[in-house]
Image (cartoon, rainbow, N blue to C red; front, side):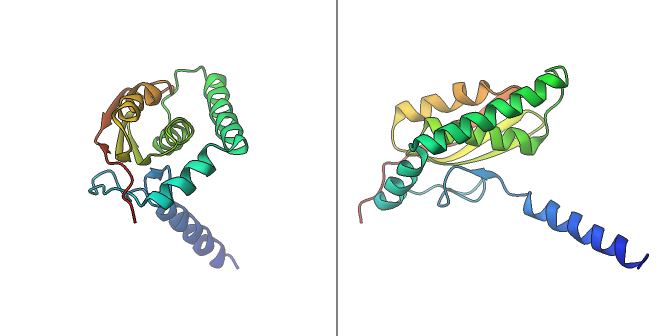
Amino acid sequence: MNKLTPFLLSGILLFGAAACSDGAKTSADAPNSTTEAASPPPADTVQKSQSDATSEIRKAQANSDIRAREQRNNITGGDAIRADGDLQSEVRSKLEVNITKGQLTVDAKDGVVTVAGTVPNQEDLAKIEPLAKEIKGVKTVNVTATVAPAAAK
């Protein structure tokens, strides 16, 4: 039993590290990484993503999540260095609620956030950086997202 416990714990930690290595995505069809080339999403996919993102339940859930993370950060003094995964997730939530037709992927490393993917118009593209900078711990934002309206079937 003493030999089995460390093996099981290391397996769980390894699985957890592998599961958390991908960037945060605002929709299932968003690019898998910030370096992947973005292509226009199908119109029906955008409509499904938008209806989910604009639902009042989803908005309340995302805003509650952001508030909870901010409160947790404030307990530590508000100036603590934030974990990369925490920044990724919080920025993704913020973008998901405010740019409902976008398909974005978010990566964070040491306070530098990179956002890639597609948005339907220039106005949404311009919203990305200011929205991301509202999150405590974000130092700079690199936006590599492109404007690509949904493709018709």
